[in-house]
Amino acid sequence: MIDNIMEKLIEGNNQYQWKIKQDLESIETKGKGPKYPVLFLTCMDSRIDIHRIFQLSPGDVLVLRNAGNIYTKDTLRSALIAVYEYNVRFIIILGHLDCGMKKVNLMKLKDKLNITTLKMIMSQGTNVFLEFQKFFKTFVDEIKNIMYQVEKFQETKFFPANVKIIGMLYDPSTGWVLQDSEFSRYSIYENFMRDYKKIIENKKFKLIDYITSIESEIIGIQENKPAAKAWKAEDSSELKSSPDTVKITSQENIKVDTNQYVALQTILEKNSEMIEKTIKMVSKVQTPKIYVPKVKIYIPKIDKYKNDKSE
Ligand SMILES: [Zn+2]
Image (tube, rainbow, N blue to C red; front, side):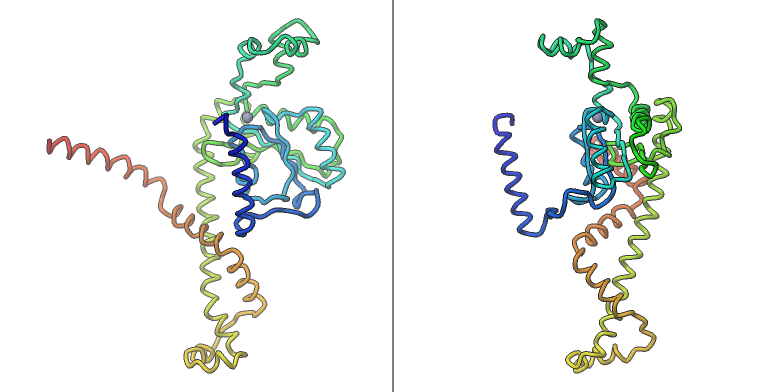
């Protein structure tokens, strides 16, 4: 793996180029500023993909990353550019559960570093642990860390009042993102984790509402389609010559705005892949997820029991 890492990356880029040609991937060529006035500061953790988590596209938002989503002079430098050059109005500190910065053993790390690095880290004092902690900015609580980094940005007073500095939490094991209103009230990490399941259950209920609304939207579009086609057919001599079409055009009470129809038609055509995916997702989610695992758990047990009996 290590030996052919460059080949792996170049192969990936070739695949990307192929996908661009096939219209399966897009590139953003316009401007350097983001489409949305948002700057993320997140962890370098390889499981976090801002664009996938929020279903964004290249060119949509600005992203800064470092180990532990930490406020530093350099993140401040970039944030100032983002706000004053690119009109960013939301600075979002997206921390995550299971952060590696919580697990770093500073004393073990110290043993791996060469003398030049040690001298650089220890240049300020003599307490090894404190100096290491100060340099690497490790923490013990992901939630407190997010709120602390938000405070650090706020304290600078370098940003205009209309810039919102917000904390968010990502769970790499489930893909859920929590807003600060869902976690900031927990001053003790253990209490948050105790309630975590409940918080996610609430989010799942909201997801069902969301999926249902998408589903009805899609069904609504599809139901409008034949009626709208018939409406269009009134002006088309070619279509009028078909008896079926004439039959449809004779229907009354077809209330479809032609502009709306064209817009919907365009949405359907342009996003057919997305809509298909959404429909699949809807049918997936509609199966009550709470019950499915129960079935899955019991079936093997029955099979095993039967097998054992027959032997
Ligand atoms: Zn992390």
